Structures are given as C-alpha cells and as structure tokens.
Image (cartoon, rainbow, N blue to C red; front, side, top):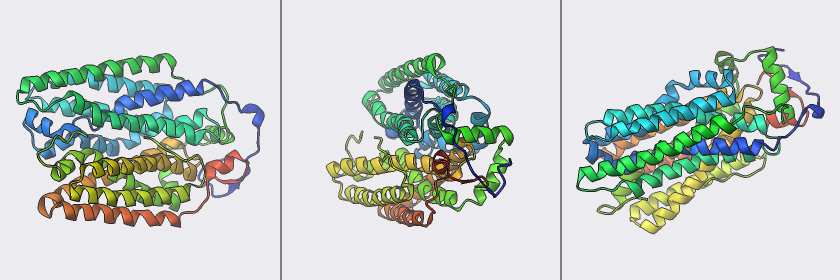
Length: 429
C-alpha cells in the first residue's frame, strides 16, 4: 500500500503481538545520559563569552560561532542525518552520536592555547554533528519501546536529558573557568573543564555500546506494528515526505509557531551573557524539564506558548529594571515553559505526521527551530548594537506574540493516537 495514497485505511487490532519490556527503562535512561553530555557542549563557551573573547582574542561575533555552529550544521545536515537515523538501527545511530561526542571532547585539549580558537570551532562542529542525531531520536526511541500511554512520558524523559545537558552546559563552565588576569590560569581551568567533558563522554559511549538496544523483539503499540507494515511495503524517502508535509497544514503551523518559541530559546542560550551583562554591568554574571501527560496537544501548546510569552515579557521587564532576583526567577520560568515547548513540538509533530517515520518530521522541525534561532541572533545583535536593548526586547516579544495564537487554527486530529485505538488513519497525511 503506498503511503502517498489519500484514502483511509482501517487498522485491525492484533494485541497478541504487542508487548512491553522492562528493559525499555534502561534504554531511555542511557539515552538521556548520553544526550546530557552532548547538549552540555552547546552553550559551554557562549556562557563564558567574556572569558572566551579575552583568552582567545576574538570578537563577540566570532565567540558566538561556538554556539551558532550547532544551528548551522543542524540546518545543513538534516537530510543526511534523517536518512542515517531511518536507515540505521537506533543503537548504531546512538553509537555514532556518542562516539562523535567523545571524539570532539577529547580533541578539545588541543584548544588549550590562546591562538587555537579554530580548534574550538572544529571540536564544536564534531559535537554539533552528534547533536544533530541526538535531537532526532527522542520521539523515535519512545515510539519504538513504549506503549501508547507511555510515549509522552518517555519522550519527555529523553528530552529531559537534552534540557538537563543544556542547563549543565550553562552552569558548569562558570564554576570551573574563572576570569583570571593571568591567562595561564585560564588555560588550567579550561584543561580541568575538558577533563570532565572527555571522561564523562567516553564513559557514556561505553555505556551505550554495552547496554543500549535498538528495539524490543515485539512492537509495543498498534501504531508501531502498523508503521512497520507500511515501511515494509513502501520505503519512505525525504522527497516523498516533503510532498506529504507540504499538504499538512497542522505541521506547517507547528513549524511556524513552536519553531519560533524554541528558536527564541536557542537564541537566549547563546546570547544570555551579553544580555545579562547589559542589565548588570560591573558584576560577575555567571548565572527542568516538565511535560503534561495528556493528548490535548493543541490546548497545551497554546497555553505553553501563552505562558512563554508572559514570562518573556516579565523577564524583559526584570532586565530593564536591573533587578537580579527578579531576573533569576523570570529566566527560570521562561526556561521552564520554553523547555516544555520543545517536548510538545516533537510529540505534536509525530502525532500529526504519522505514519511518516518520526526522524523525518523531527529533523525538519529542528531546521525550523535553528533557522529562527540564527535569524534572532543576526537581527537582534544588529538591533542591540544600533537601536538599543529595549528595541530588541520589543522585537522578541512581538515575534513570540505573533507565533502564539495561530496554534489555535490547527485541527485536533492525532493520527498516531487514532492508530493505537484502532480508528481509521489517513495514510496520505
């Protein structure tokens, strides 16, 4: 049966072939762990941007590239990465991901010299390729191992590892690398940071090789059983998927709304240091995951975007008032809802694009997120320098407000959920 057909198919239940395995909790735990060390690399240098500028003698724009390189490579490599994840097993993809992370972190020792910022970019690029794989896997892994009532929880656990890694990458470098006057002391601090990075990433690589498994002997849900049958009959490619995505209005709304919200979060992770420095000059400016287990995705998406907007406004007010306590509180609340939007975006994408393989839709979602993030970085950096921070903050809030309400225009159809309960599913998307 071709997946390009527009007719609906009735899915017959075959519960005797479905089974949940206790080992699924080991698999998702290993995934969350290895994602955390990879994501910690994302903002590792940008969070100490002033030290990076001083130590390597580079400009702010060049220092930003240590984070922007992740966004650029996620956009450039989304097709080959998506194909890799779909063609290879989950274990092979995970080994490649953890192997690249370990390689990149071990090579960072070569960047412990004032004239080797190029090595920072090279090693960050290696970790960025690994991140490209890691960001695609949560929904696919959750669907492969968990039942229909556990998929959202499993996906949130996997993404918790990603968010926890982002948090660690924003905290640990500030605790280890200090802004010494003596550059040799900064070299020692960077060496210490890289020792932790390499030791943890190599350990998680070994953990993946030893304990990670691709899939259970029997599928955990009706939708996975059906997806397996469809893939065997008609091999999906990106080019087929693009045609189907172009007709899927719900998916396009997700790209434009949740893409903006998640893109702004990625911008914030890269540019937090100069924003804090502007609000609190002459100070040391070193500064969770949550998800609702329900299938009311449209309502939850709207509420998350709305609260994201509210706390974004509160955060801007706190920064403009130079109130450090209020800034810490509002930044945490903003991150709380922004992190939630990433979980919902991945889950919602998988729901509305079923039965297209999960990796394709999530890869395109990541392209949308990082495209918006790059636009934010380039435009807002220019606005901050020319028109001031207040104007830049107004642009941030306005764009988030525009992205909040179109989510209400989406349909409430959840195709993967329908497949799991035996309803007819439109296989033409």
